[in-house]
Image (tube, rainbow, N blue to C red; front, top):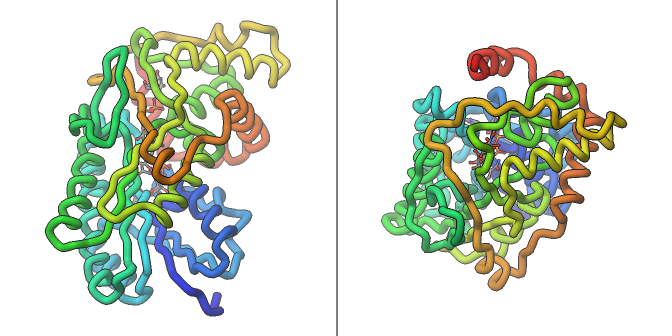
Length: 353
Ligand code: NAD
Ligand code: DAU
């Protein structure tokens, strides 16, 4: 610690999947910034994700809960951040269906706590900015055609997306009502190293390694637009530095896949990587009861961030998927650590089909 830093930035949720990639990027690239990572270390947060940078002199971890108003106010008063990149959230749609209230608490109340504390800093510092990391799920579901743009109406269908839509609205309202400088980005499905193995890609990689069934929801003809997490971290860096206050940016991978096609591709690649007979992983595919309120299709028009800020994905899906699988195969200890405890109990209940 110590040293003279030009700026201090608070990243919330930095021990989670996307947050850890953002923290790593900021700590390594911006030595002149003091980077604070505030995280409650829920089941989804793991400091092992940041082993490689935890001793850097410009990095500080703060364990804490964004729903704790007093703690947030004290932390902001003490550290006088120049900006906030807010990623801390409950992020898994299936969990939001069984426990909506914890999504309201963290995603709505937690965000409003951060906004209130930010307002005080913004009054003292005209360069202060609040950047909210959000999701394309706020726009609801698309049919077979069309793309979400920044002007698409909000139409959230799951408790998760309703909580993220609500937090987006609060951020915008704080901009309009109190003049808080803010940016919001709404991103499509991320995949890559360090993603908790409850989400489709890491769950299925983990299950193939362990020779367990691959539970495809419903008919499997649901479409998602996949983006490699490091490309998302690059976009977040760009929006934080170059984005205009009061603006929203959609971020996507220009990479739509039907779940069943993605799973079949994953199975083929896994057979090769594990040196198993062609077709062995595919045999694990099991069609199970559908997710209630399952959105048919998400697809993002990312032309605004491309045209205005010059961002595009750098990694193809085939490259990204290969790198992701290699990471999980090389980090099975990580998988063992994160899948102990709470997760096992949750999944015992979830998969009693
Ligand atoms: P994640 O679940 O992997 O990580 C969330 C992190 O937030 C964890 O480290 C957790 O400990 C922390 N956290 C949760 N509740 C907290 C609380 N009350 N106080 C402090 N910390 C808390 O999530 P992720 O997939 O990395 O997503 C990060 C953000 O990006 C979320 O806001 C999510 O809505 C958004 N997002 C995710 C995706 C995606 O595909 N994963 C896509 C678009 C947007
Ligand atoms: O679109 C962005 C969103 O992407 C983020 O905001 C969320 O935080 C993130 O969790 C993700 O939401 P999804 O619901 O799209 O991701 P998930 O990995 O849970 O599911 C992807 C698709 O795969 C979806 O159509 C449901 C299906 N699925 C998922 C799981 C976990 C299955 O068929 N079987 C499964 O076991």
